[in-house]
Amino acid sequence: MSGNDSNFFSKVYEVVKQIPYGRVTSYGAIAKHIGAAGSARMVGWAMNASHNLPDIPAHRVVNRKGLLTGKHHFDGTNLMQQLLESEGIIVIENQIQDFEKVFWDPEKELN
Image 1 (tube, rainbow, N blue to C red):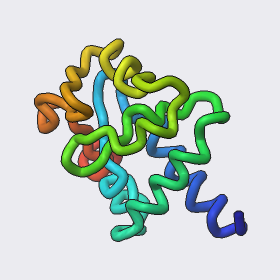
Image 2: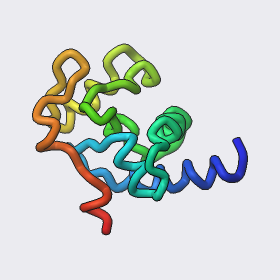
Image 3: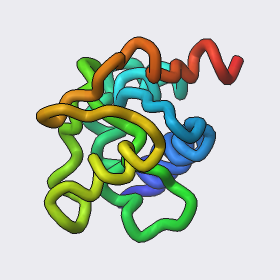
């Protein structure tokens, strides 16, 4: 990982740490907020690399349609879903229900 990547990842983690309990955001919304619109995949890589870091609620980051696309990176088959459900988020077939209601937009919330 280059210095650039670690700086990018740090910016991603700073946003992810602020996602409130019971809310989710998307890879793209995070990328846009940190000034890297179009870098949703890199945000995904950052989430992938975050699993051994404390205080990074990676389970709260999903794709732009509310799908749990990162779930195979969590230990256990349904850990991502279980973590979300423990926060009151309803997930059916890897799809967050009422996505618009639980979506947290860092552009609006952190400016």
